[in-house]
Length: 224
Image 1: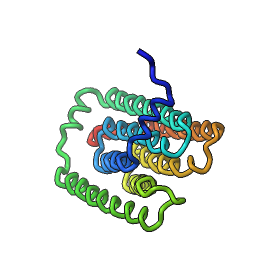
Image 2: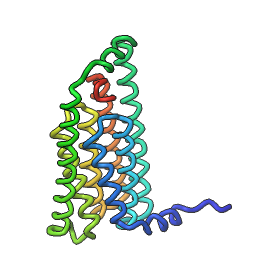
Image 3: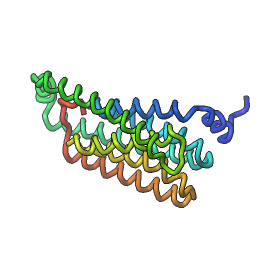
């Protein structure tokens, strides 16, 4: 059995419609807005980097898109390890009984439900805005689905920056903005040097996010 080459893999990926990748971005962005569980949100970031590679497969050389996916895998791994370490540190600090008491303590369920309802309405509103902007102001004559992906990622990322207090969530919002920017900028500059520098920026940012998350500690009510 022959192992498929990188060109073979991306020939298959190129068959995925840009609109289908947009749907993936819509789903991951909604998860980031609604969910607080760090496992789900980090998984959403990982899926966004995979979708980034699928979207770039329509725009740039295969090796460039593949490099972006690899960078995303390392970013997600760094965020995962940081979140786990923050959780272990909080558990050791509070002790098993204290952590259990905090997690089982009564929380304002109605307030949490209201917050999630607001974020759901916000997500639907941002979807409409992103699609409308893509139709009215397409970015550099890119296909509508790709322009909508860029607008959506930017809007979701900015919303997370505004609404979130936890450094890990804020960092995920910043990474989401950068993923949207990466789709556009890769069409302008696709040299390997720029890709390497951009990858270093993403990795350093993930490292800073992880450090701040560990330093701040964990809010057990948010499942971090």
